[in-house]
Image (cartoon, rainbow, N blue to C red; front, side, top):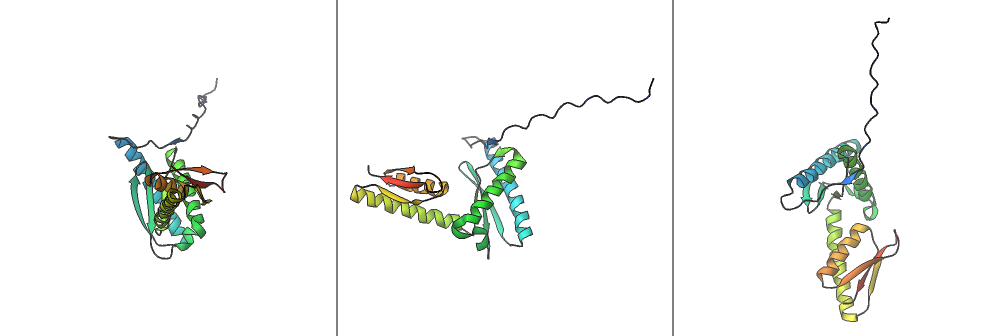
Amino acid sequence: MSNVEQAEPTPPPEPTPAAEPAPAPTAGGDEALRALEQEGDVAADYLEALLDIADYDGDLDLDVEGDRAMVAIEGEGLADLVGPEGAVLDALQDLTRLAVLRETGRRSRLMLDIAGWRRARRAALTTLGTEAAETVKSSGEPVRLDPMTPFERKVVHDAVAAAGLRSESEGEEPQRCVVVLPA
């Protein structure tokens, strides 16, 4: 007989749950709001570390708009983090969303803005959508706009709807564009 005890076999690890989108806030959706605030906090921690590593100075501002956590980095000399036509900003947003997924287990729709670039882009796209709608109203002919990212198309669709017309997206990424249609 041996004095060595045999350890009980350990059960296999639990499967990791599939990533689910963060719950959308509803009236009285305190839990959903807390989840979005948590996304913002995780994103801020990730971005602060990234700024430190890359030796950039920036102030982070966290907010929740609708069903999205919003993180803005403001400061001088951040143009390299925006890149040409926001390409670096989009990549940093994707990386930040992955960091949130890793930490929370939930997919994020977080929106990142750096040096006000996305805010300015939204204003320009709103103007573009409104002007395209006015052109369609006066000519009665559809107007096809240049290819855009999903974020950009959403802003234009919203501006066209606010002008009382409808629009649709056509084509395949990365050449997908908005077509503004007559009433």
